Image (cartoon, rainbow, N blue to C red; front, side):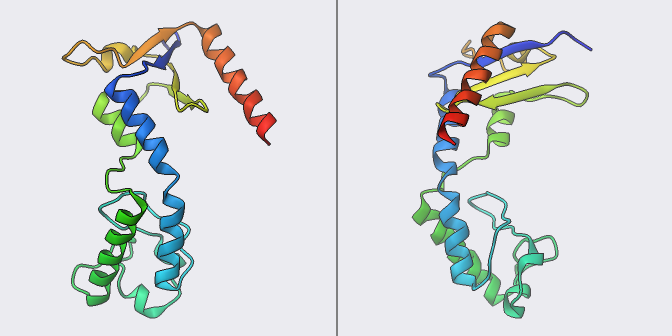
Length: 176
């Protein structure tokens, strides 16, 4: 196994901005769950957070009319009037919640090359300021190099990583 390396996100980069936007928008999903549950007359607690495609856990559905609108994998059926109504409803809920531009963190990391391949280790933690810190057994800087020369992450010491991690734990304990 390779030696572990430590990194933090480089502030001000497009990657940093995309990550911060993700975390800022992420809190709006709570109202999507609530509105969807209210509109369907069901309790929806499991939902893929994707603004263009509604996918839920179909085992949560109790009303027959709702069950008929979803496939076994939780996605909406394409040939059902009820499914089309739910799709339009979902679209309007997403727009009202301001989530039309939402991207998952996994998608953002993939786009910017901040990801691991099979057999590699990548651990991440988020600070209260939505900065990301990484511990990896590969070179994230090399993997995520941009054509414009922008460095998306910067290498730090294990001590810096550990100090920040402990500082964040302390903040969480004080808030609790």
